[in-house]
Amino acid sequence: MINVLFIDCCIRGEQSRTKRLAEAFLSALSCREGVLIERLTLMDEPLIPFSNGFFWQRERLLEAGGLDHPRFRYAHQFQQADKIVIAAPFWDLSFPALLKVYIENLCVQGITFDCDEKTGTYGVCQAKKMLFLTTRGGAFENGPLDNGTKYLRDMARFFGIPEFTHIAADGLDLGREPAEAILERAIGRAQEAAKTF
Image 1 (cartoon, one colour):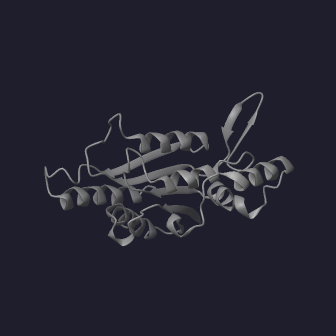
Image 2 (cartoon, one colour):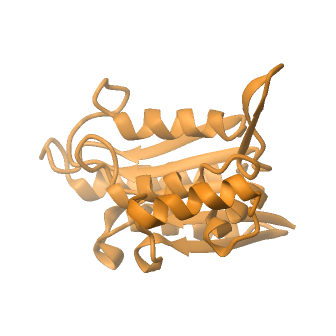
């Protein structure tokens, strides 16, 4: 059984174009035998940024080796997944802050990464692939202002995940062609990618 963790940061819910792209991918993926999709909807989670007591609780737990504490459940879930799918819209040149807060909660030494004198810092996640699905109103594909894709690629490397890819519906709001046509092309690419993901 292949355990795929789907991280949903499509904050517009069912009105989200990114959600449409993600659901098309997941539908195609679920047709494959031996694939189990575990969904994590970030908008439904009690995620909070590190501040005050919440930060210091984390520091005390790490110092005491309390990695089995419930607050590290996101890191354990992420570490144990065989493959990772993240869906989030392009937002302020990156993605919604909620996804960054989630990632902040993933970064736990001894769970998702570790370090030693010989190797330095290295990822210890089980996943072999990470896929990022996104939609953008403007044209940012392969441009210097797409900070979200670059950041997630770097985080995949940090977590020890060897393969990172992304699929984007780009330029949806520019009026150069119908948004639906652009989105349908991206959906086609996503469905094709599901065959080998």
